[in-house]
Length: 541
Image (tube, rainbow, N blue to C red; front, side):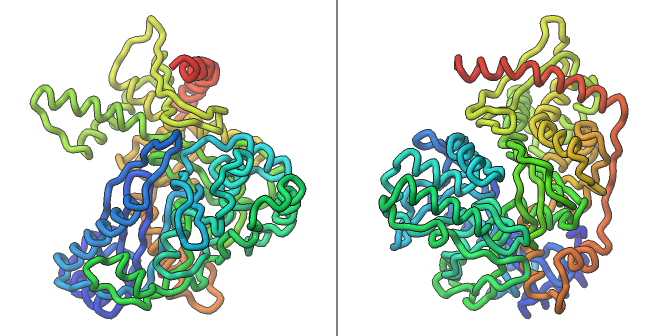
């Protein structure tokens, strides 16, 4: 699946582009918007990206509409520019398009399409009361970042915008709507807005009834909407998602070269695209996506024995049940430390590229003591619901007699990035959830071996990183778009991925080493005891 291409490949790619035998995937990640164009062989023909950051406004993490559209247009322009430079072709059409975004959150609109409050992202941990009450109401875990939790918390807060609410969606659903006019989302994304039924075909009817009854009993007549009317329609992978409208084409490509009429697949969240990008949609498969946040997805054979606050229940893009452990914090604090070390090098006159800096630091971590040598860290840039925190304070602590070495410190940063995740995955182990293979992807695994070895130690199981792992969610979204266009009659998403996309894909597997497993267990003992230190930091600072 490497994107190193020969002259013959370039000629073939040019033909595919001219003939529209391509698929375009666009994903709005937490720190980067990325677009990839793939050909008939599912390899990347061209890509483009745009860096962006969320901002804290009024106590809530958000991105502005200007950031969304300016970032998307810049990202697409970069991709189109690469197509022109690489193939000598002005990009006018593609075979299909797919839009993905950071999962769930809350985008509320009035009947005129006006955004009523700033986009509330997955990173906000301000819906604890709503999540708790809805979990009790449904007998089903409702995480704080889910759209219905944000909606009900707004009800509990008596927010005035609810009186004008006409439509509720996610970032991916919003962008898809503006491009096509269709108010729909893929089932994987829908399952993080409101619980879906056991067949993965739509929202759970009984839970819709319970929510409606709750609103009628407590808030009779106050709000002019019904939950069923404001949620987007649900579609599964392979189903039609509408076509690019003339207005949508101009929104995406400000140059005016892109033609309308291109089919779009249902939009998905980054959890779904991560499953596709790692070929982890079959039962007993799992994947870990590690970047700004970290989450593990395991496709279930049977339901869990009870409701767990730490475990979300969602679906694959095809509707199969999935247990998900999602943690708000992963590499942000690690990135900050890497930036500090880079700045130190600059003081001494050495300018180091980010890729080299991370490679050296990650590899140095492998030289550290398996238990980090008495060092302790919490990477909580924001709250971490899995361990019970609504706010976070990045924190580094060491014992007075602990030596401060770079290798131990960097291993600590890698451990800290996975510590909250291990808390949730331990529940799945105790539930005896079967996992035949666990695949890692995302920036955490970009440096060969380092992140993979640490993950194997943390979860005490083999971890595979495929050569496609670096392609990310935008590539996974492009594959979903291709599936909608190229699937054969009755072909499942699982079969499509196994037989066509990943048939010749290679990967490396690392099995856990006993000393590192023991070391991570020791680190976790310190980590759990030290959570009181983190609580004190939140209260005092």
